[in-house]
Length: 323
Image (cartoon, rainbow, N blue to C red; front, top):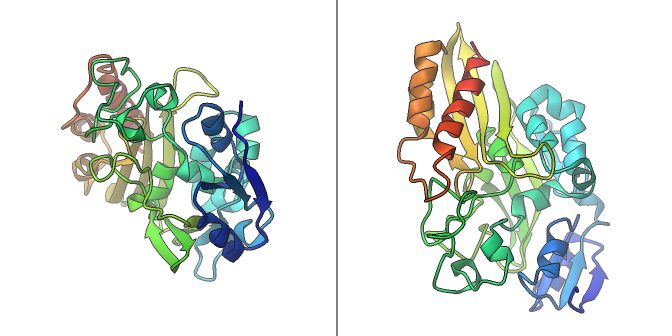
């Protein structure tokens, strides 16, 4: 059963921020993750503040400089089906189309997808783990087949978002509003690694909310894509995935950004893969070396060693598509 709580509709960002300064208050947008967390008693709540009626948080529009502004309330379906997004950033449209199921994409928002809680069954279950303020990560020595192979420290979750890696490779930023005003943070640094704070998923401070996502104009020759491998076609999170942004010039890679999903507590940038392909043609030898570089430094747990060959295969497949 859900806990008892007050429910208010904020008419503006300013009003929402004011409400969120109250203790025990959570923001409600699409609610696809929030309601699950409340039902599973991941956290409690005394008041929910709905931002669903704030028009300034909606819409997908092209900016004067040729980039794109996406309101935090834009649904995942809107992002996936936007002609503007498909034309300028096809990798982001692909990532959005891979999120959950059609029903959840219709309800869930882009802002919520970036801010969702981890799906670790210990965190979601009746375990007082590190992320809940305990002194132990139960995945260590436990059922860890879906946990991370990079960046594990104190907590070994994997970040659940598909859109976050795709936005990161595109150098997108989020605009945040809170009691102290507004600020802009790159999506690449928006998520909090457990080594910095195992009880936080993002850099959001109390009372702050994401209001919009900003994408810079695509550089000439940009090719972006997203590849996700999961156990089932729908409803599943990534076992391993790769967001890729390439700029090619005369057949060689002039610029590259690579982020992985499903293998780390935050969207994981692979500078190793970037360095392996930069300045080179994506021939068989280069792709093979990049796949080997992709798993450099990986530390699989007792039951997720399969992610090593899986990630290598994902890298090979995505880079080979550019040959």
